[in-house]
Image (cartoon, helix red, strand yellow):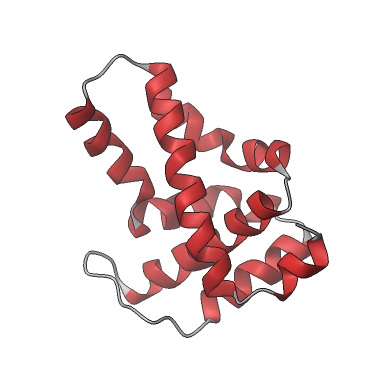
Length: 128
């Protein structure tokens, strides 16, 4: 997708795509790094893919954001969301929505190397 078209998407839609892309990223890293059974893989991935896990990762990578990524993050963080988190604070949920919007934007625009660069810290944690 063209960058300008992706930038015009509703940030909650970007977060919807970003949630799926991030979940797949984490699952792939777990499968490649281990030979755990699916139950264990699910538990491990849930910790990273949760709003709390995403908010924690965001603190480590936010400084790496480009101006465009920061703008998309802020739009996602501040967007009115149709649902509320059951297991995270409002602040964590807002941060995770902004994070997912950035992931969705990068995924839709085909910036896979950039995604890998930003998420490599998570990859290190998954291996450890």
